[in-house]
Image (cartoon, rainbow, N blue to C red):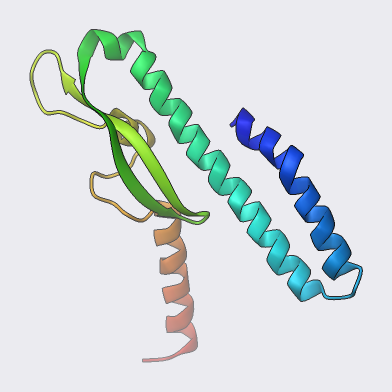
Length: 139
């Protein structure tokens, strides 16, 4: 997460300043909000992705993992649609040393179902929109 924050400070604050000068000072609040939102969403996506990467690394290096699991596949990829856009997740597939079913410990640790392609936050947003539409458009 630290790297994403440093990158934001070094690069994205300059982008925000340019957006401010180009749109807000010119009275174009619509474009200012849209462009600012894009910068902030990308920042959130980078933080989310970096956090997952750090958790995976902590799992891989942990004594618990070393004691109980072998690394079966080093870098399996998964894409997850989140409110920040698509995240490319790289995680290891672990085989228990005592036998049993292999598992993606990262997925288990953060609560991702095996084949989900959409985050719970996105599913919740979709559900809320469905409820709003049902209230506005009687069947």
